[in-house]
Image (cartoon, rainbow, N blue to C red; front, side):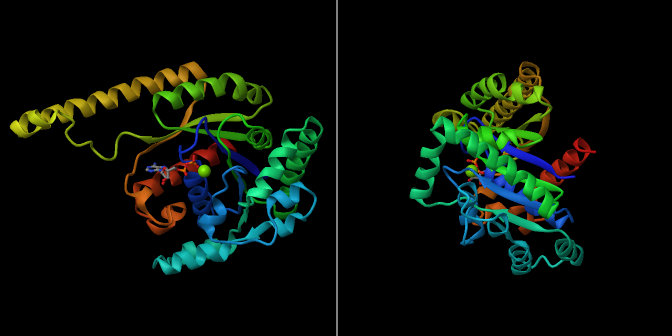
Length: 307
Ligand SMILES: Nc1ncnc2c1ncn2[C@@H]1O[C@H](COP(=O)(O)OP(=O)(O)O)[C@@H](O)[C@H]1O
Ligand SMILES: [Mg+2]
């Protein structure tokens, strides 16, 4: 059976693309077959990430101008080449990839294509037609490719596109950074959207990303105090840091209660990964990195969820 997981968030920059692409690639190296779909149609990123120029886009499929097999691109070799380039030639990983299938469906980055879809989605009559195509795409992927997972990267917010993507998922992972706007926006989304999907049987979880807990902040005292007393400043840093952790922990408890949603994963802010030039495959490049371990744990959680 194919499980379909959509990554969504209130605002951009919460890690949807980074986590969905790393997770999908890691799943493939674990032997799962995966289809990763870029449904962030307003700001697609997977095409740049995977440096692929497909002949046909998901946009073409939605407009009946392409068949599914022209849009779903076999990208197994990208992962194998990437692993080899980075000296990660562990036999099990490579042979898992031979077994596991890794496909990606890309959204067009052309301005005209994005405007065309956007215009179409604004007309009431074509909206229903587009939703039908979304459902058809998910069904055809399941029938033709029979993947273990379809992983969807979506547009943030309550745009028509994201709602379509959420409608075909059987689990929604709602990523958020722990800042005030994100927390408040997530509350709104939870009331207005996820609760309706939950009634239809879709599972929804919070995925806390970039939480405190990896890099310790530098001393955040005013400069004059900073210089004067090393011991004092380091004590203050510890106090500040433990305050941040305490505050974070009570915010998380409150969030879970308010939204009646569980937290499926809490991923710290790994300042180093955002500077990796190919951050969408960090987990393959650095198998020992704690970020990779977090994603492996997430795979285990997802497997439990769908058992
Ligand atoms: N756990 C993390 N630690 C550090 N940086 C992260 C983490 N998750 C994502 N990022 C960085 O945050 C930025 C935004 O992530 P991205 O995946 O593009 O967000 P979105 O797709 O939700 O807009 C990227 O530069 C990415 O490297
Ligand atoms: Mg993105």
